[in-house]
Length: 242
Image 1 (cartoon, rainbow, N blue to C red):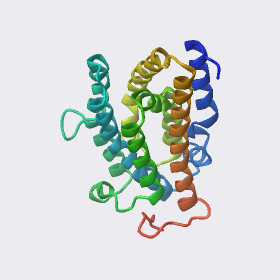
Image 2 (image 1 turned 30 degrees about the horizontal axis):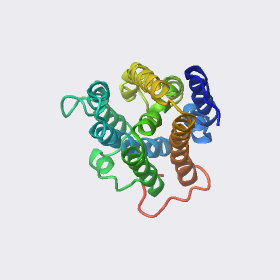
Image 3 (image 1 turned 120 degrees about the horizontal axis):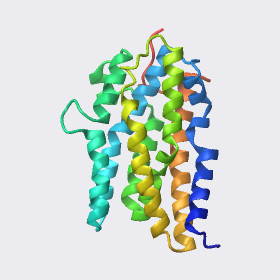
Image 4 (image 1 turned 90 degrees about the vertical axis):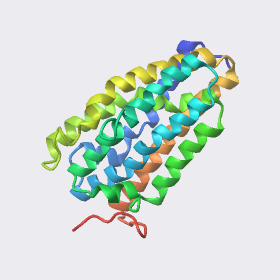
């Protein structure tokens, strides 16, 4: 097992994103290309809500395990970004305005009654990973944010151009995310490059990012299977009108 320089480790991490990030998934190509129906967009937003809602819980568990106060202070910004400083502030509140704008009942979205089982399993696996793996691996699993500004740009441009039922106000969640993602991913990347000091630790960092990319890909697989082809919606999951 070869020791990588910090620059080589970063190159290897970015290569994982170039090959495995879910912007390459067929479902996202349909979504961003304007090829989804209203119901398919609703299903994506509803299922993605669970992921968004669990990010602060994941981050709080990471903070609880971190003995370095400087790292805790840095990571706390993620909680504020998602939870906000009040009930109508933060990323989760903005995501609910997205589902509102798509015509989904808020109580139904929050209840998670329409969630795909695979979405629940994937998100819960992410929370468990962060709780149980080393702190280095937990931090590394967040590095998909290195690639999120590109997918957000594609999403905003494609959806605004293609869907009459989507407005800039509906997509307000994404206005603030790119600079937050850059800030957060830069910190996490520096942390991993500094603290992955052995070949074994470097491989753990790479495997953590592969795990996270696979998790996001699996969520897209579930959406595609249920709502695109072969359209086999699991019992109890959200069923679009029409």
